Image (cartoon, rainbow, N blue to C red; front, side, top):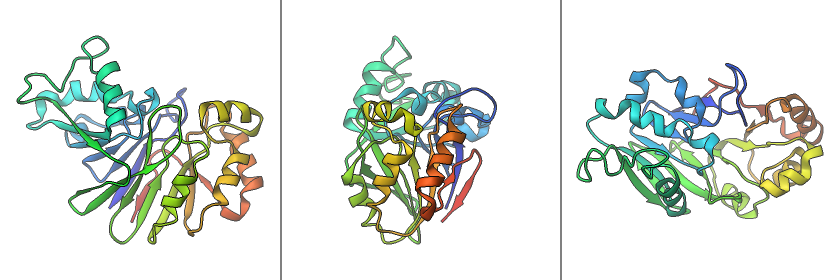
Length: 255
């Protein structure tokens, strides 16, 4: 099983800055930020499943355009997975006929371009031997993390989260954990903003990682443009024992 990073920035501003999207093998997207827009037409057509952590724009920006672009080249609907709260926000605020067409009803309700698949916390979806499980996080809108399990190894992607004991409880139950991709959006001087927006800064991340009971490789995602070097320097100071690394576009994980 291969996971490729299409985008992992907290913003845009150049060819190296793409927002959150991860490609699992060739047919599953985890979030659909601007990174997904760099895929070729054939690569977009091959995607059958999209798992959303939440509906903030940096995690769904490419989804409406992707569906519109490839719909006439696909023989079955694209399946979008999320909690009922996440899917409800999509229906009401994105695919509502005003912001973007309701592709769950087009070209017809019987043969739509888009299909919603609700998931619940702790539920595992298995697709050709790949197991994806929604884990709890704490954010300003309904959100989840994902465990991606090949059977021999697991990768956990936090999505966006602030302080969340339940997340670490779930992670500590994963006996084959190999990789943890965890957000850290702000440097320490923006600690109040991190608290307000339910993101993490290095000091908060250090406190959260103290709850981790599993050995794994740790990668940092969702760094804000213009502050990534400062944030990573602060992370290095307070988290040196964990040897965290900055997640990068086109990084490939095999597990």
